[in-house]
Amino acid sequence: MRYFLIKSEPGVWSWDQMVAEGAKGTHWNGVRNHQAAIHLKAMAKGDRCFFYHSNEERQIVGLVQVIKTAYPDPTDPAGRFVMVDVKAQKTFRRPVTLGQIKAEPRLAHISLVRQSRLSVMDIDDAAAALILEMGGMG
Image (cartoon, rainbow, N blue to C red):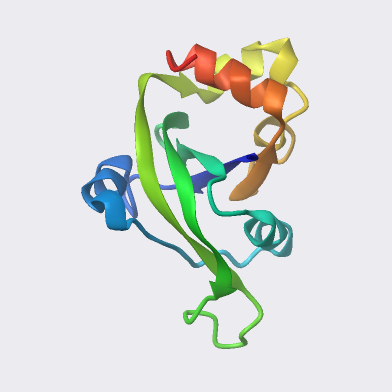
């Protein structure tokens, strides 16, 4: 099992909306960055993604599970990009803010710190364990 991080503006698609989708989950579409798309293509069924509220909140609020691997994104007229299906798994007991992540030297290497505009990124196991602990999930 691998970990990733996916970003959404809460005014566009929020954690509460993700949770409301229930066990059937929903698709994660609209990714148009090639590096982010590579991460979507690398996701396997059962992988987990940190759900990050971007812009005004800038915090990880929950964990989703990949329930369907990459397939063509019908919102891409060129047919080059993919989407995955995810379902909400757990709400963090304590949201983990970008400020907390930046203040933790053991997380200085993750893409959220180094490439802040990337919408989908991989998270190594050690960083994932630390983020889960910070969120009260460890």
